Image 1 (tube, rainbow, N blue to C red):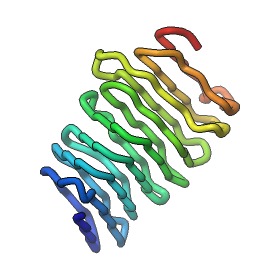
Image 2: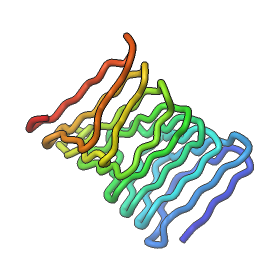
Image 3: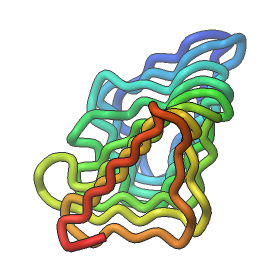
Length: 173
């Protein structure tokens, strides 16, 4: 396994074998992924935003914690094979996967938007949501399952005029 710790911003790309990858930033440092492939699990704890400039391919589970900052992983070619846990207490969440995307835990900031897309690359994919309520307060909520049925075991909610909900299920909702 590989462990990377930065006292500021961390920019990484490359391939990591089956041992997985653990990254940590401190002092408000962001974590920025270029073209990155991890055969095993990914664990990222960032004091700042978690962003990307290239495709992410993760063969195992993914745990991504951006503290009070945003998680923005919007490359349409991303491929999160295993379960994904997302945590931010103050920022937005925007994660897209080229095929199936399974979210097992979601903690999002109050009044911060959440966007989760499966099948974003046009190949079709099923979005599986955690068995919990998802609320974005006055911000937008966008849940899209471009290749399967979209279903949730918890309540979906927004409030106020800015809190609109978009739900797409290619085979139904």
